[in-house]
Amino acid sequence: MKFTTIPHPQPTHDHAREAAIQDPGFGTVFTDHMVTIDYDEAKRGWHTATLGPREPIALDPAASVLHYAQEIFEGMKAYNHEDGGLCLFRPEENARRFNASARRMAMPEIPEDLFLEAVTRLVEKDAAWMPPIEGGSLYIRPFMFASEAFLGVRPARQYKFVVILVSSGNYFKKGVNPVKIWVSQDYVRAAPGGTGAAKTGGNYAASLVPQAEAIRHGCDQVVFLDAVEKKWVEELGGMNLFFIRRDGSVITPPLTGTILPGITRDTLIAMLREEGLEVREEPYSITQWREEAESGELLEVLACGTAAVVTPVGTVASPAGEFTIGTGGTGQMAAKMRERLVGLQHGRVEDRHGWVTRV
Ligand SMILES: *Cc1c(COP(=O)(O)O)cnc(C)c1O
Image (cartoon, rainbow, N blue to C red; front, top):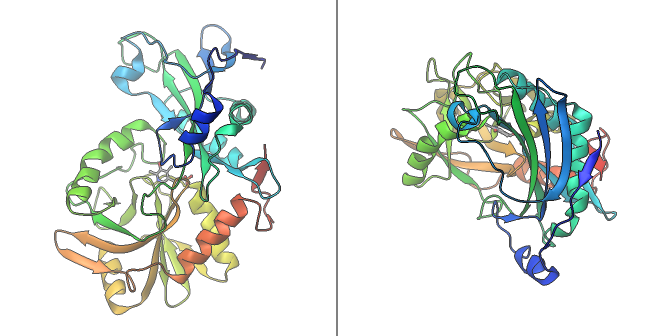
């Protein structure tokens, strides 16, 4: 597909950009450009790919997304590569997962090549927004929503695919310190047959009240249990979990449709196996978690995702009380896996899997 480039009438001045990216935090320092591609079922399918200035999107008030939430997104990062230039980490997995989400939400798939081209062109265009700091990255947010003006309930026939970038530092303000998590008793994130495996905004909307509850209880994040028995540990609001045990085994909850199949999760499974650990994808209960933490069988718990990389879970809190994993600090495996993954992402560790793509 041909991309039309629209020049920015007023790009951010160098000094203003340089000041903004010194300590960008997460989620507010946007770059100058965006990509948009339109979809129309009746016409040409995907058409009119544009790389232009980042600007508001005009929507009809009846646009389906505003009423029935037909929306999906991805989260990925561009990193500074050791040898200069920028790189992406397993971006084709994001393209594939985006289309899996699209299928679940009755939305059209976008050719993987087109998804990757949109991301790559935008990263090249706004590469100067990469923060010059340790742990800095360009967070890439591709998303798609139903733009058709129609209030009937059926899959829309018009969509918009958009990519924006956020100049970002560390996701957690505290850096790599262990997180304290809150076990949600009253709320669930996803039920069997629901949309838990799709990266769709509604899952996040549903997690905000339990997340606020977690914050009220002095926790950083919420951990969700399964919707049926309220017994099995699923994941955090936006991160997958690994339980590292003294006997050399590692357990991570299986992908049964209620858990988001994290790309970091998949990467960690491979990395932990290379470490000689026996990684099993099997259910792990909240009771087992408490018992193994108290007996010392459980050495570490890792939370992982693109935004926060690998973060140790230090303490687990619920109305029944608290328990701590190990000493509540950052364990050996958390530190090792985090360093290796970050090293891979920046080209400092040999990439034996072909995970790194130069931009
Ligand atoms: C995106 C996401 C993750 C992490 O996926 P990565 O591909 O590792 O970034 C985990 N859980 C949920 C609910 C998510 O939305």
